[in-house]
Amino acid sequence: MPRILHTMIRVGNLDRSIEFYTKVLGMRLLRREDYPDGKFTLAFVGYQDESEGAVIELTYNWGVDHYEMGNAFGHIAIAVPDAKAACDEIRARGGKVIREAGPMKHGTTVIAFVEDPDGYKIELIERP
Ligand SMILES: C[C@@H](O)C(=O)SC[C@H](NC(=O)CC[C@H](N)C(=O)O)C(=O)NCC(=O)O
Ligand code: NI
Image: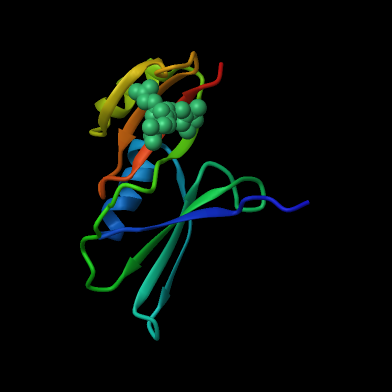
């Protein structure tokens, strides 16, 4: 049965991103690998091992500290038991909440949005 393994995002500062995904969002750094021939480093972060759940692949191209975000990519979604409490905790840990918890526009699902250090959007979806 195929399954989603990871979503890859390019980041401008790997340590900054690892710090955010582990310390602010509570993920684990699962593995980090340098590819000197390609001048890039990969770091995988997530809540479960890669054999158990989808993860985020942080790609750092050496010397590239900024990417144009454009308007096509949407977000990565995380399930949380209480979206408001999650926003409060993320703020307390220094994270940036860009959309407070509440029912989504045109719908009823309770969501919130957080922005990562590069400006990628992380959606918190309330799943009690
Ligand atoms: C169900 C949950 O996973 C969602 O992502 S719905 C969130 C909702 N999405 C949209 O409105 C998509 C259309 C929009 N025009 C777009 O291109 O992003 C959303 O972002 N709602 C915003 C809000 O504040 O509720
Ligand atoms: Ni979504």
